[in-house]
Every structure is written in structure tokens, then in C-alpha cells.
Image (cartoon, rainbow, N blue to C red; front, side, top):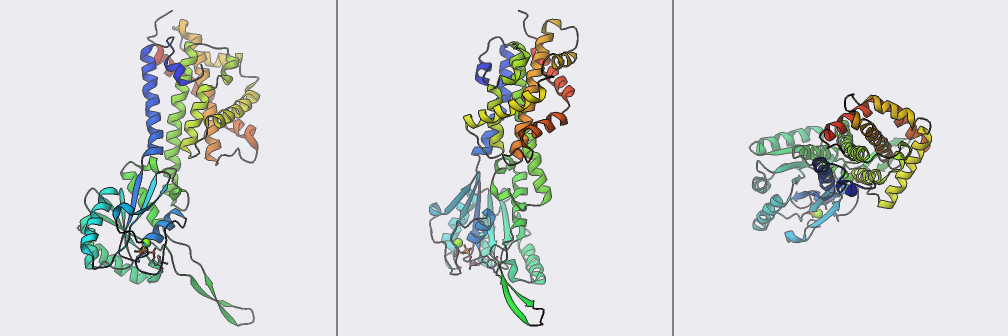
Length: 417
Ligand SMILES: Nc1nc2c(ncn2[C@@H]2O[C@H](COP(=O)(O)OP(=O)(O)OP(=O)(O)O)[C@@H](O)[C@H]2O)c(=O)[nH]1
Ligand SMILES: [Mg+2]
């Protein structure tokens, strides 16, 4: 049994069971497709020189969009020419800022921006002017996620920020917008250094952009819209987000990984139950495991090739074979047998073997997951130690029990041969 395709075509497995496995597999495919294909469009929008281009650069941590103190640095005036940058599933779109005099063009653009974007960043460098409020009225709607970004916050004192925030809240209370402050390209700080001899001199220190609140707000909007899975691997969320968001990201990935692993485990378990193979070969019937590892690698933004996935699988198998050599045989089979309830003696051994197939794939999946979660690394102590710690951590009997319950539930209507 080398692959899912073979399994889906295998007529020793009842057609209804195959259909069910196919269904589960389709939902894993959907999850991966969302991760890879669903795009999230974030548009920066606002008056000239409010810092739209620098804000997008700061979000991505790179200098993709040109910035300049001159008004009108971002020039393309046609919405179709808007500059964009794609980072995994997130597409950032920069729009040219204009001044107060071209209301009509702006109005058109506002509509375009609103239509195309999942999230609009309406960028301000101070309080809202009347023309900005008009634009905002055009963009904001109950269905549209709009973040009102008070940028250049480094230019204001905390009191001034509070005053501007208050005014912004008053002006926008009828609208569905959220307010957030940022500093996308803060001025360097001048600091006075006092020498031991009492003399003083000035030093300038660069200040990092501050877009943490903005990133968090973006994540919350994606959460509300059920789009977090798509955003999982975007580098936008790789660093400096708050603890709760970071925990959510880890959790989200773990849940998706568990779903992938369990789907492949069940497929393997059913395959083995219907076509029992010698227990000693279980570790090396690897086709399904390779496919699982490829899917897991995508979840972690790595996208392994088939041959790299096969190599990784072989490394993990080798560790398991070393570790389990002694137990991986009669011992293990007898503990698997214990999980199968009596009264179904015809399928008893088959189910027990299926459960072992499930367990082997489960171990491979969990070890690979840990390897990916550690950034494609075995950790300081190498693959053997990692495999060992996972085997130790997992409760073998409860996994075998879950496996045989699921296999038996699926196969209970299997016609007797
Ligand atoms: N003090 C301060 N200056 C900023 C900040 N963000 C951007 N700037 C400066 O504001 C100027 C305009 O920045 P851009 O990012 O080019 O602004 P833009 O909105 O894209 O401008 P246009 O494309 O011309 O509409 C540049 O000189 C930036 O260095 C900030 O957070 N603090
Ligand atoms: Mg610009």
C-alpha cells in the first residue's frame, strides 16, 4: 500500500469506507488549499505623505515600496497600476495619495479600494480633515473592515495623541471603523550622553517602526472573518505580535496538523486492516506517510518536494526502527490486540494490525510536526532524541485504542470473505 490513490482504488476496502476516507481527505485538501490559495488583500489608502508606503514596508519588514518626504511619491494614478506586493497569502496594495483638490479621482479610488480589499488601512498623520472624512464615509460600511491608522505617532506627545484619538472617535462613531496608532518610519531620537568627565555630547539613535498594534488588529479582523488559516504563513505574523495572538497561531497550526495526521493515520489503518502486512514491515510501508509529511510541511510554510519528503520520512523511520526494534513486533501486536473488543474474532487480528499501522503513521506525523515546528530542525540532540521524546510523550495504549475503535467502527459492515 503505497499511496492514498492506491487505497482509494483498493476494492478489498468496502466502497462506503473508501468514500468516507475520500471525504476526509478532501477536507484536508481544502484546508491546504486555503493556506496556499486564498489571498487576503490589504490596501493602504489616504492623503499624500501620511506614510502609506512606509506603513506597508514596516508591516512586511522590507523596503519594497518607495517612500519620500516629497508629496506624491507613489505616483501611479490608475487603480489598475497600484503597486502591490505579495507575501505568501497576503497581498499588500499601495495607493498614491492625493491632495485635497482631486475629489473625483479620489472618490473613484475609494470605491475601488473598498471593493477589492479585505482590509482597508485608512492612513492619517493627524486629525481627520473634512475631505478625509468624506472619503472614509465612502469606504466604511458594515461589511467592510476598515482600520483608521493614526500614523506618525512619534511626532505627538501622549496627551496630543489622546486628544486626536478622542476627536477621531467622535467623528467616526457612526462608522464601522477601528482606530489604531502606529509609527511606520519614526524620526531618529537625539539622546544626550554624559561622559564620566562631566562633558556631554549628542547621539542620534534610529528608532524601529512601531506597527505591533496594527498587526494585532489585522489578525483580529482575520479571525472574525475566518481567514486566519490563510494568513498563517505570512511573515507579517512571524514576529512581534502579542502573546495571545502568537498562542492562537500556534494553536491554529496544531489543530490543522492534528487533523492532517489523523486523516492519514486512519487511511493507513484501514489500508493495513484490509490488507494485513507483517508487523515488522509496518514502519517501511511509507507511501502514505510521505504524502502526510508533504502536507504538514505546507502547513508550516515549507513546501517540501516529494523526494525531500521521502528523505525526511526515511530518516524518521530509521529512528523509530532503532527505538522500537525490540518492541516493534510481538509485544506491540499483543498490546494492540488487547484494544480490540471480543466477539469480532474474524476481524480481530486485522483490526489490531490496522491499529498498529495507524500508530506508526501517528508517530511519524508527530515527529515530523515537531521537526517543522522547530524551524526544520531536529534540535541540538539530533533526530534520535527528538523521536525518543515524542514516543515517550505519547500514550501508546490510548492511541491504539482510538485507532482500533475508529477502524472497527468503519469496518463493522465489511462483508466477510
Ligand atoms: N516622523 C515620522 N515620519 C514618517 C512616519 N512614517 C512615514 N514618515 C515620513 O513621511 C514621509 C512620507 O512617507 P511615505 O511612506 O512616502 O508616505 P506616502 O503616504 O506613501 O506618500 P505618497 O505616496 O507621496 O502619498 C517620509 O518622509 C517618511 O519618512 C512616521 O511614523 N513618523
Ligand atoms: Mg507612497
